[in-house]
Image 1: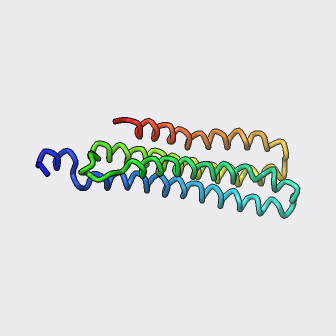
Image 2 (image 1 turned 180 degrees about the horizontal axis):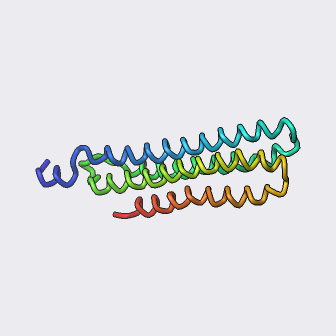
Image 3 (image 1 turned 120 degrees about the vertical axis):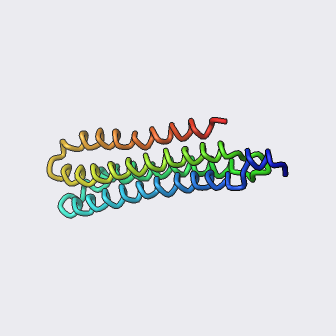
Length: 161
């Protein structure tokens, strides 16, 4: 292997791609898990008094689960594109994959936290005042879109050459 190829495609280049794939799924799954747990706690507390609202108030849990799917999509895309340095996997590509994974991962983490907090308070409030439900859904949509923004940036970074 020539020294020029070694400089442009160092042996540690794929490490950054692997870290991008790992970051995408780890951080987005952490956000989804927090959102699910926090919202689920609120649903459990609310369902003691108003069990008829359980299925209606499961929406925050579903929305939190979608956050993990965003990270899974990017992690699979990145993992499918990782190659050995001999195959032409450059350090630049590794950095792009790391950036893509971090973008979707951290935005998924933030969105999951927001969904969990809003979902917990929202379902408890909906049990006391049913008119609060529409407001809770709107706030959850705004929290979910934070993860979607990270997915869009991650896809954009992934497709760069």
